[in-house]
Amino acid sequence: MTTLKERLRDDLTAAIKARNELRSSTLRLTLAAVSAAEVAGEEKRELSDDEVRLVVQGEAKKRRDAADAFAKAGRAEQAERERAEGAVLAEFLPQQLSDEELAAIVAAAVAESGATGPQGMGAVMKLVRPKVEGVAEGGRVAAAVKAALAAK
Image (cartoon, rainbow, N blue to C red; front, top):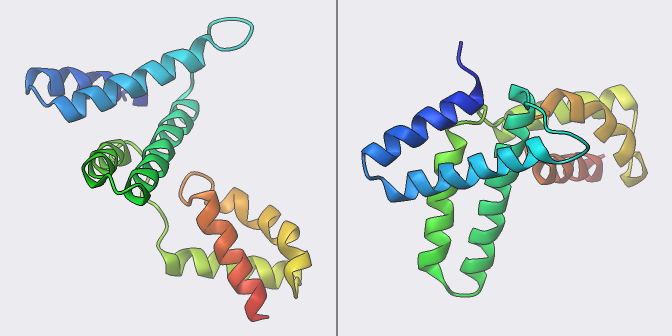
């Protein structure tokens, strides 16, 4: 079984051969971020698949944030490129939870914690976070928890 880092490298090679500029530049930047994470700290080390996935998630989040910023600034062309780069990175990430699946997990956590208002946010997040790690963005999770607690 190939590792995520090997998949990224293989896809980069294929994108270069296909002369796909968007895909190759996105994968180059992502692999550079992985390499930077490997040499960060006391000594160089090889990242695990989970650690590489976290780096890819961080890169995807950067693309989403940049797309939003470009869109707000009226720079639609750059925003569209950032969204396209985010779509390339999404291929290497696990499928995100739907809103309904996330709401069900949050509702179960609210019931389990017995939280009744906004002051219970921390307790609910503590229960929800391990269940949705890597398959739901933190902002979405927090919004779902706030909505569930506000409905109580």
